[in-house]
Figure 1: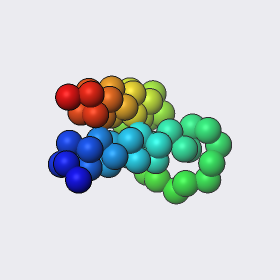
Figure 2: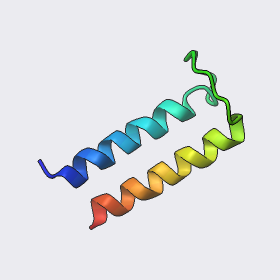
Figure 3: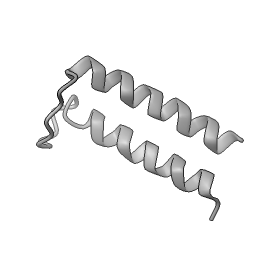
Length: 55
């Protein structure tokens, strides 16, 4: 297993974990940066993981 794929998987899981509260799934997370900050972080995580997989 390559380290790139492992990091990409972690980033995808992180993005899903951040987006779950927005989709009305009950996950108790304190988000100090607000909802839209979480959306931006999740989108960046998905983009970075995509490029890690494509490399």
